Every structure is written in structure tokens, then in C-alpha cells.
Length: 373
Image 1 (tube, rainbow, N blue to C red):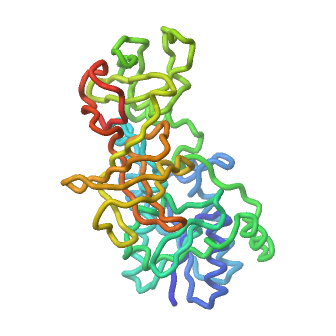
Image 2: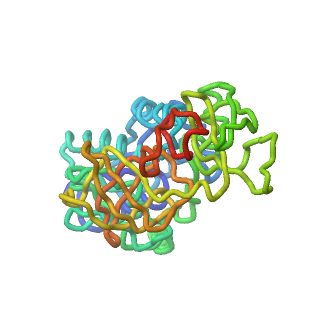
């Protein structure tokens, strides 16, 4: 089999490529250049896809004895990941750029080019398992990345290889050390790769500027001011700068973001709890269901798992009735459905709460819910 190994410069992609070589496949390594200023994309263990990473990937390819190339995807990454990230926050949603990168870059742009060049599949270092075309959680639950892969189609998964799904991260590092790979002890990248300093608010403020508005409670009373709704996400507690404390002294959290009225609604921790989530644009890895069904749903990349009943409205929009209420559910995130460890499919969260009024109504007229504005 002729495969293209996507090599980020980290230990996971290095060992994935090594296992592809050990399997006897015809392997070519490729590093994706995702920025026109790659030196700015890493600060210590933050970020990725920097010049340092491309050099690490090249050294690994040399040790493995495989051809190695750098492909410039900076323009596509800017449009499909970075610009999308900014526009989603501007619209009051909370995006997951890793999920978008997998969907638009690694398994759209990269895979399309690989297939056009005659490769059979793309190999990556994701911690997830594939079996008979179905996607499963990794055996290492702490490193499982099936959530951010659940947006992939069956056709894309048919041309994907995830060699690490049956291994823990400790086993991967030990294997890299045995192979003499310098990346064996390289720290994992954290946070958002294109925000190397970790300051998401600062990154968004530089692109969207200041857009002053008000922060209100669930009755519409003004509690403070803000410099832009893009500075907030549902469930946020810190950085609210409220001028009026709550009557009980309890902390307040962001319940809803209203870009149209330039308003942020806050309330108690209890107000954050939701028992129903709506999603659109479903993607099915398992056979699409003909009727309502029960499963587990995950609402964030890390945690927020609940048993749920899935049903559909007349327009095909997905409705998840949660058996355990969840806090801080944000529009723009993915709702991923599991049957045990198997990924059934995913949808993009658009709002929460059964029968709750639309987001552009005055706060006093409704119980706050996650909104797209």
C-alpha cells in the first residue's frame, strides 16, 4: 500500500509513520506549512506547525529512510481554520479549530491531493481506532481524539490510517525512544496552534477590535459593560468585570451571547444546566438511523458525556435529550454520538433547551439558552 504520512514534527505522527514503514508500506512523509510566518506558531509547548516542527519531522523521516516533502497549505489554513475561528466567535459561537483542521485540511485538502497523486491513504498520529470503516475511541482514554475526527465522512475514513489507536501515549514515547527519534521526549502541543501565546481574547481583539456592549442578568438588568461579545464563551466565569455583585454572593457565569444586540447574559451555575441540545449538519459514520435511538453523546473535546435520546425534527435537525444535565454547552461545538466506544456520527450544536424562544428576544422574556445570535 502506498501511503502519505502527515508528519507534524511531534512524537505521535513520528511513531505513526514508523509503524507504517514497519508494516512494509511504501511511505512518503509530508509536513504541512500552515503559516507564512511559521516561527510565530510555537512558544515552548504551545502551538505547533513551526519551523522547529518541520525540522523535527524531516529528521524523523531521515531516520526512517523515507522521502519527505513540505507542502504549503498556509492560504487554505488561513481561510478554512483561522478566518472561520474568528467569524464563529464574531457570531457568538465557540468553534473547535482542531476539528475544523481535521475536516478541511488533513482530510480534505491533504487527502484530496494525496489521492490525486496516487496514494491509497493518509496516515496520521491521531489517537483513535479504525475497524471495518468504523471509528472507535482510542484505548488511551486520556488521549482519545475520536471527538475531533467525528466530522469525517465514511469516504474520508476509508482512506485514513490511525496506527496509534491501540497504544497509550507512554507506549508511543517508549517506542520513539527505541527507534532513536529525538522527538521521543518532545512536549505535546497545547491550546490553539495558531495562538502560540495562549491569549485567545487578545488574538480576537486584534482582529475584531472593540465593540462595547452590556452584560445583563436573566431579568435584563445591566450588571456591567464589555468590549465585545467575541471575548466570551458560554460557561465563562473569569474576566466578567461585573459592577454589581449577585444578591447571594454566588459567582456568575456566561449563559448566552447575543451578537445582534451586543449583549452578554450571565447567571448562576444552576442556570447553566441544560437537558436538551439541538444540532444541525449531521455526519453519519454508522448507518444513518431511521428513527429515534439511545446513545452516549459528548459535547466538548474533553468531557461533557451523557446518555441521551436522539430524535429529529421535520427539517432533519437533531435533538438530543440528555439523561444527565450538562453545564456550559456552547453553540459551535460538536455533538458526537457514541455506541460504546464506536462513533455513530456528529452534528454541530446550534442551541439548547426544548421550546426555548429564539436568541434575539430580550433576555427578560426567556430563560437564557445557548444561541448563535
